[in-house]
Image (cartoon, rainbow, N blue to C red; front, side, top):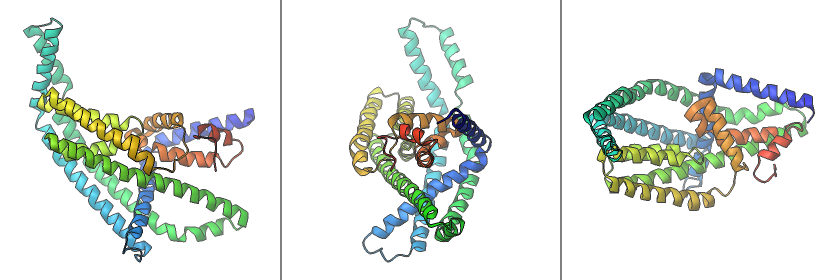
Length: 346
């Protein structure tokens, strides 16, 4: 790569990053819709593999998959709103627990006294606003609902565009060799992303189900909501499972002040994560996206800094698509090779 090419690549990267940040409100729903369309395509293919459903036409399989997905989103939204309201109503209990733990810590540090307790209480009142936080989340639910409707609309039109897409490619690329190369690139992206997202979604459902069973057996309140949160965070590589379990443990400790129960939840939830992450996931996801661990980590930092939590969730598939695109050009192929797991781009 010449100095001129390096300058062009750097300038293009900065420009694309600036556009992604400025156009987040427009671009992010489209990207999320694309990712969910991949999941729906994988789900529709899975439905047709079910014994007795192989006769189902493509359009009906898409409708069934979209209906199931819509019902799941509606159910999880209802669970989230209900549980957030319950959490908002327990603010006083949380503050009492925190005061109790801070008082114990003050005793250990030799800082007993009314002045210390008052200072801790003032600090908690000024910083801890559970109802405000929960109601803020609830108030943003309307915006999320609007985004959901917009994303669902995008998905419907994207699914409808799949059928005529091959004819459009024929018209845009009349040359046989160019058309074959373009179709090969699209097919590779489709296969990798559909496999990753559909399989990852199935694994996260299993993680959420195991976590719900653990929390239900331990008597942890709002178990369904926390299981959904753990499953959602599990899309984030490396740190997602830690974040999900950590939030549940903090809530359990504050809600019950039971160290034994919290430690038991830690062991059980960690065991479920280890089982899925170290045994089940490597066997189910046999087809890797060919990204090195360092690339995944850097992608997580980059996309989360651009788009926050949604960026962290879609970091891996977005980087995989970018890697396939970079591999098509001689000037950027070296970047794709360095970012891949084994250097094999095909």
